[in-house]
Image (cartoon, rainbow, N blue to C red):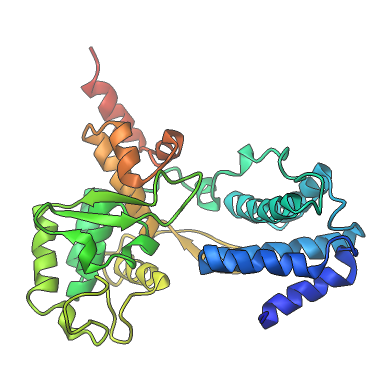
Length: 336
C-alpha cells in the first residue's frame, strides 16, 4: 500500500505531468523497487526528486515522457537560482536519471534525457565555497578527546579519527565486525556504486584505541546502556533507548564536543537557505582528517583509496586539501 507521501507524489504526477502513456503505476513500481533494494534515505531522495520534477513539468506544461536535455538544464537552473549546493543538485539529477532509466527499460520512453547532461561542475559542496580546508589538526582532535566526559563519546571520536569511516558506517558496526587480535574492523561501505570499491572493506586501529575499546566492551562501559544486549553482541555504538545509535546523533555529539563550551574549535562557515548553520567540524571532517594525515605521513594514495573504500582514485584526491603551511613544509622537506 502506498504511503501518504507516495500518494501525494503520484497524485501530482497523474494530474498534468504524465499522460496515458506513462501511468502512475510505473512510478509506483519504481519506488517499490527502490524501497526493496536501496536505503531509506535513497527512497526519500528519490521521492523528493520526482515530486520536484513533477512540479517543474506542471509549470512548464510539458509531459513527463517528452523531456529533452534542455528541460533538464532548465530544471537545474531553478535549483541554482534557489542557491542549492552543487552536490545536492547532482544528487537530484542522478535520482531523476534512475527514474528515466527504469522507464527506458520498459519502453515507456525512447531514451534517458539526462544521459547527455554535463554534471562536471556539480561535484563540490556548498562548504567548498567557504573553505578549502576540511581536516582537523592533531591538536584539535586531542582537544575533542579531552572534552569527552563520557566513555562512549570518547570511543566515537577515536573511532572516526582512527578509521576514517562515515557516520552511517560507524553506527552500523557490530561487535562481531571487530577483530581485536588483528586490531581491525570490517566496515560495510555505506555508498555503493560509482564512489565505492566494494560492499565492504577492512580498516585498522591503534593500540591506544584498543585500550578504549577494552574499557567499553570488557570493563562495563557499554553494558551500562539499556540498548546493549545482554549477550555482549550487537552494535558497537548503543544508546540508553536503542540498540544502535542514529546517524544524526553522531553529528550532534561531534558538534557538541567541538563547541565553545567543550573543545572550543568549532567555526560556523555559513548559514544555508533554511537558516541552519553549517560548521567546519563535522563527523565527515574526521574522514578528511584521516586522509590528509596519512598522506602527510607518506601513505601512497592507492592504499588510502582502499581504506576509504573509493573506486576512483580521483575521489580520494578530493579529500586531500592542504593548508598553505603544509605545502610550504612539504616543499622544504622534498627540496633537492
